[in-house]
Image (cartoon, rainbow, N blue to C red; front, side):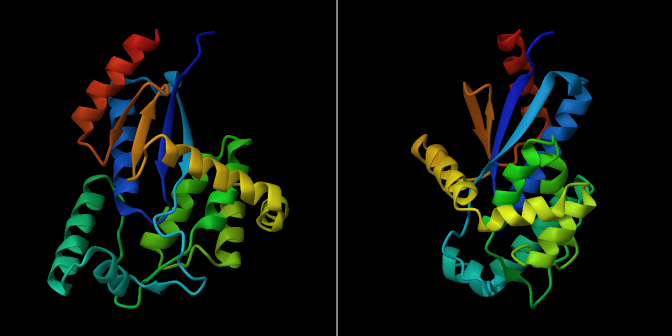
Length: 216
């Protein structure tokens, strides 16, 4: 059987454009009818590796990190909400929303990989954060996400205290950063070519087709 085209998606759970990018890529894959030729693997990237456990008010965080004005922040929310609607994803922004630390989420996504549940868990977590007003750094939220996608929550949660599992995420993050990945989403095709950002569906279709042609 022919080996599948490997797509690595370097992203963070709380990155809105990563969600949009994946949903557009998913649409491109479906429209080309190549679902059975693709293997997706999610790679860790923390937008805010120094985010404290208690998180930070989202608006405050965006203003502080990017120098955005409150008006620009409001426009960004409207833009994201519209982009989400176009791919059937709900961004439910609210005044008290907090940016979360996502390291534990990445540990669990690595755990989900061995059961082919990475994409399912990734979308469960990103939906919890953006659509359901949940804090994805909290243990109960993470545990429920594992249960929701049919994973062994006890085994998964035990990894959060496992030094080896935590070091693996740090090493993988470092690997991608050393390759030059400094913004997300970065979507890598067969470890040969990459695109960054939430490209339009047609762009993804073109890049995908080229990657498939080179792969075959």
